[in-house]
Each structure stands twice: as structure tokens, then as C-alpha cells.
Length: 621
Image (cartoon, rainbow, N blue to C red; front, side, top):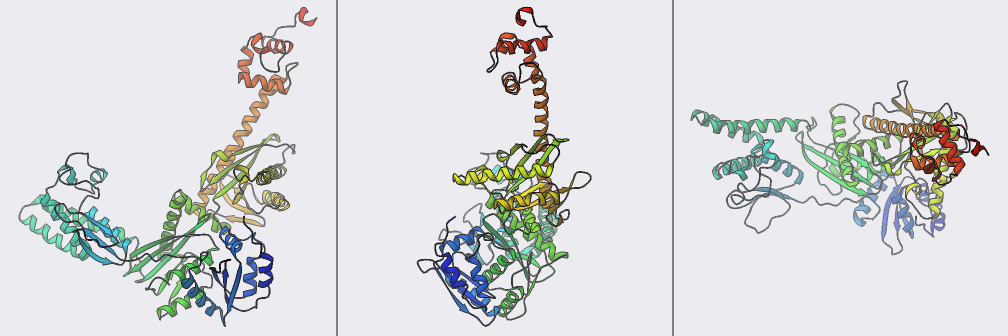
């Protein structure tokens, strides 16, 4: 990691700052502002940047390495500092602040000209002969509406051309799940298609209620005219609209106008999700992925101020998924921008809590797409991070378990989970060397020491793969005693990694996470519980399988080493050549003698052992 040659000089300057609120601006060597921050006490906050880097995330370290000088502006209050900071961030767009791109713009529904028209959501109007409906502010709601219209009226969303592509290919999946009428197979006439398309446009323009009323009138008329096939088709469309409205109720809010925020922190990025409700219904949704991670409360505070700096509408209620740094000041800032009171809440139960959880799941899904994992895995890692009080998501987890039989064949297993998934290529096995008898604490200390001695050796070679990679989290299969036994080893070696134990109940199921000083119950944290249980089961399986393998080898080795003239080295050579003791017992004398390291007398001893022959007088001689 790059270090700043001016660090001592900058710290000395920071230590002379006043103990008052203010805003500070970090500049690089070219004079560009690369970070803007606020502080309740300038001296304390700014000096932290140029002290120990142990608690800095990677983004802060990069920023500090590039600071050439800084300036500051004194403020009369924390609120004045917050307002000024928000204004300066918007003005200078510093590289290391959370920056949101205002790409909202307008959206349109594009309707192609000619027969067999198609509809789609687009960002701009072009001179292409198509008809454009709009503009609309929410691209998300338009995409959802267009998609719903296609499904309700069973219109195609493929690129097939009609009538040119009639019958060329089999119908797609949408036909079989009753979401398309398969015009590509000639299953509906152009007249029927255009009628369904016109009804879909009416649905988009007039809304579901108007569309249902119009379709009901048409259905009644068709039934009176005994056009039962048409009436049934219209009935199905009405039912599809009702089903869609039922699904929308899942994301409805009793609060008429509000926004819901949630974040999910990864190893290097943070995903923010926003649900916007108007009229008690989800009207818009936005996702942002920003570089860097920060303490949750700090990240929420900066994001909220950035977001409402680029959005005109501020609702009276804003629900977030956790604490916000300077929450009262941020709420005051929002209220002054809106011109009326804005309530900033952290729901703990009920409908609002469910909405926040849904928003959080979508933030996890955004992070999962970035990480190449699943939403469930990203959500579990973020839940575990919050549960353990970690600033950074534990993307790379190492877990350890000791296995022996009454102190014999003492071994350990190490498994690795990366982004919530087993990374089997990084698994390691250890034979305990310095501990005899059943001493799990001593064995675990030996394993951890050997692992991080390897880490230091890898670092000296400039190799950050395998043992050269520092884990984000270490989990030990055991309770507080294991944590207390191992933590001094990490401290002595200067290794700063979060360390916890995995505690089982009397039925050998994961019950809690142990730390020095107590336990953290995880049963109520469903996703984190599942992840930790999987890790504990996997490391136990891996360690015990290695132990059984060692016991088997010990048994085999003791069988061969019981033969006169066969020591450990020759026993290993025999097993390497023959794989099993049975194969050794069935080998002839010449084959045994041909094994590397064997002599004819040793081969004869092995042969006699398995064939129960007494030494001949010639051999004795």
C-alpha cells in the first residue's frame, strides 16, 4: 500500500487545528480537492487521518496517500458544518466522497409504426417514424408498466418479425407459461393482435381501473352477442389485471408519501437502494453502486444528503435500515430544504420494517450482481457484518477446527468461504506437531501461528495469493475459550483480523458466535445463521475426514512397521507403490524388492510376514 511521505508533516498541522466545528478540504499535489468532510471537533477528526491506518478502509488509505495539503473552514455549529459540507461536495464532486450521478432524465414509451406494432421503454425520442408516449419521470415504473401490459395482453417481447418469421422456430417459454399468444406460430390474426395491442396501450395510458371498466363492458357485449371465445379472452385479461394489482399490494405503504433507503456493503463497494412511494404505492425505485466502504451510519448520512441534492421531491417520511450519523442534523437539513418537517426513522417492527427489509434485500441483490454471487449470499454476508460490528463485509472468511481421538492423530482443518461460497482450492490441512495429547487450545494456537508465519513469508516474497492473503474474518470451531487462547497469538504477531468462535448446542447445532467477553446469539438472524452453520459444518467435516484418513494411515503404517526391517520410510514407499496393504500382501518377492528403498532381505521379510513362512537356513546364514 502506497504511503504518504508528508504524513508526519500533515499530522503535525492537524494537531494544531482548533477544537471547534468546521469543514476540511483535502487537496492532492495538483491542488484538486479530493475529499470534503465535516467535523464536530476539527483537530480530532482531521488528525485521525494521519495517525494509525489500522482502522482505515482501503478507500481512506488511498485518499490519505494522495493528500498533499488541506484547508479548513470554521463554522459556528455542527449544523452549519453539515450544510456547508453538502454544498461543497455538490460543487467540487471530490473523488473520494460518495458521488451519485444524476442520470434520472425522462423516459418514453416507443410504439413502432406499421403492422404488428411493438412497445418498449426508451430514454430519448428519435426521428424514426415511431410514436412516442410520454415523457415520464420514472424509468423503472415505465419498464414495470410495459412489462405488465405485455404479460396481461399476452404480447411478445422477442425480436421475431411478423409475418416473416411465422413458423420458423418453436414458440418460446412465454407461450408455455401463458404470457404470450405466440403470433410467431400464426396462432392469432393481425386483427386480433392489433386489438390486444390497442387494449395494452389503453391500460398504460388510463391505468388498471379504467382498463378493467372498458374490458368488462366489451366482455358483457361479447357475451350478449354469443361471442363466447372473445368474452373468455377478455375475462382472462381482466383476471390478469386483478392478479397484477394483488401483487402490487405487497409493496404498498399506508404512508401516502415516503422514501425507503437501505445499503449493502461489499468488500470494495457499497450498494444503495431507494424505494419511492406516492399515493401509498411503489412509484419508483433506484439503485446506486458507489466505490469504497465506510461505517454504516456515516455512509447513510452522506448518501442521504447527496441523494436529496440531486432530487427535487423530498417526502415527509424517510425510513432507513439503520442509524444515520448526525441523524437529527440530517433531518433538520432535509426539513429546511423541503420547507416542512421531515421525519427520518429507523423502523423496528410492522409494515415499515418489512418495507425496509425488502429494500435491503434489493440492495443485497445489486451487490450480488457486482460480486458475481447471489442476493442470498450478499445479504447473509452483510447481515453477518452488522451482527459482528464489522465495517467491512467479510468477503474472505477462514474457519478452523481441531480433530483427534483422545489426543491421538491430532490434526486441524482450515476451510475458506469467499463471497459466501466455499473456496475449496484454498482449503488447508495441518498435522499438529508441537502438542501431544488432547489440548485443543494448544493445537489451535499452533495452527494459527503456523498459518500467519506463512502469511509473513508470502508477504516478504510479494505474493498475496494463498496464505499471502489476509482474511477478513477468522472463525474458530469453539467458544470463548478458543478465542481467548488464540487472540494473544494474533496480537503478538501484529495480525489485525476479526476473530470469533462458533458455538454449538448440546445437539451439535450452531447456537451462537463467541467473542472475548461473551456470546452473540444468531438464531434470529436467519441468513447469517445459515451461513455460519454452513461454515461450521463444512470445517468440521473437513477436519474429521482428514483425521480419519490419518487414523487409517496410522493403522496401515503400524501394520507394515511391525515387520522387522520395515521402518516409516519403507512403509511409506510400499504404500506409495501399492496403494493398499492387500496389494502389498499379494505382491511377489521380485516386485517387493523393486520398490525404491527396499532391499532383498527387507522384501523377504515382508513376503514371509504375509505368507507366514519361517526363515530358511540359507537366509539365516
